Image 1 (cartoon, rainbow, N blue to C red):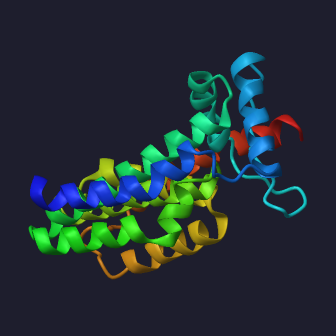
Image 2: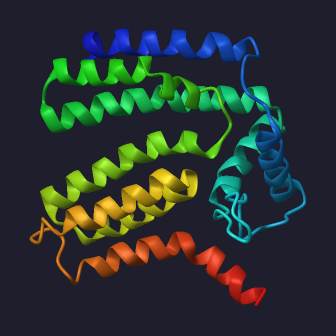
Length: 224
């Protein structure tokens, strides 16, 4: 494993860390808005039930992105350069997890190396490693999503159905368009796997999804 994974780690590191350490990363209105919201949570204890706007009037993301940023703000003392460096670390960890998950499924060093190397060199993965924005979380969350499907098919576990619902909700909260498409595709595809996805099991998938929606539901009731 070390012999095939080490070159991937080295490549991924060289493509991520030097630029971030030198201060080459995006910091726009969205990053400023999100870090200010996370700062209010950390230092003013201003807890929120909704997150950033989706761009559509009256429709918001959930608050999970802000709560994910909050400990990073605390650790970095609000320094965006340090937070971006943490995102680069998350990007590297994502590549490593892709290797490990692929190897667990395929038992092939060659396939694992090829797929993880593609991720290490991918423009989308590189962009996610140098930007403080919620879509960056979609990539590591997809590893959890694939793990859930693998465990459900392998063990037919209700617990993993619950985690799958939570994961779909978090992916939708991180990137709405892709998340909606993925969730719809998950439900449609599950119809072809009646042994693993029984009618009774869908309630666990729904409960997981509703857990992510709960803060917005409470917000709507609270504000009429």
